[in-house]
Length: 273
Image 1 (cartoon, one colour):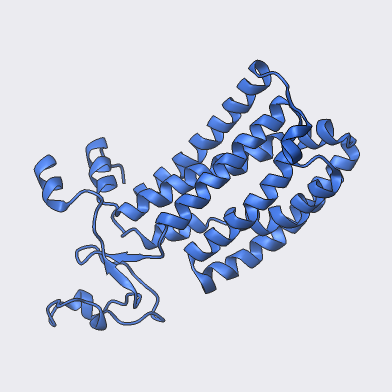
Image 2 (cartoon, one colour):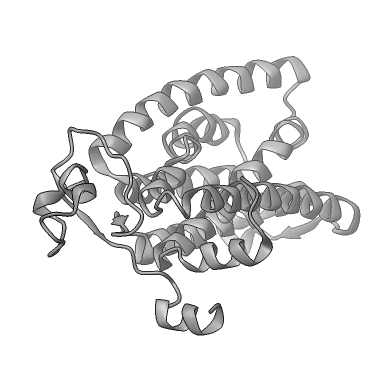
C-alpha cells in the first residue's frame, strides 16, 4: 500500500539506532564492492599487462570461486551471526584490497583475486546486512527499511561510478620513489581509485567492529510471525497480560529485545502528534 512522505519519516524514525549502523554499512559496502567491480578489468589489463583473453579467464575463475564462498557464507551467517561474519570478512577483505591496491606483481594479484577476495568480499556480498536489518525491524517498519537499504546500495554504486569517471578525467599519474618501500611506484588514476576503495574497507571494518551488534527486536504492538522453532513468547513477553491472545499464540526468538526507536517515542509524539 502507498504511504505518504509524512508516514515514511515516522516509520524511519521508529527504526532502532542499530538499523542506522546497518544502513551505513550497506552504503560503504556497496561503494567498496561496486567500485572495484567497475574497474577491475581495465585495472588488471593496464597495470599488469594481461591480455583481454587472459583477463576473461581470470575473472571467470574468480566468479566461480566467489559463488562457492558465497554459498558457504550463507551457512556461516546462520552459525556465527552477522557481526562475527562481517568483522571476519572485512578483516580478510582488507588484506585482499591491500594486495590489489599496492601490489605490483601477478602473484599478489592472484592471491587477492582467488583467495582473499572470495573469503572476504564474497561473504559481504550475500546480503548479510539485510539479514541484520530484518532482525532489527518489525512488520510496520521493515518495508521502508529495505527500501532505504536498496536506495543506499544503489546511491553508493552510482557515486562510485561518478567518482571513478571523475578521477579518470581529472587526476594525473603520480609516482612514489623507492624510499616509500612497498608503497613505491606509479599510481595511475585507476590505482588511485582502488586506494580510495581500500580506505572505504578500513572505515567499514572499524564501524562494524565498534558499533555493529547482533540484535533481534520486537514491538509489543507490532508482532512478527516467527518460526515455531523459536522459543515461545510466553517466556519473553515481559509482563504482558496472560489473556493477550496475540502473545500467547506468538513465537519470538529467545534473544529478542524491545524495539527502541532512534528517536524516543515521547519526542516522536511531540513532533508528529
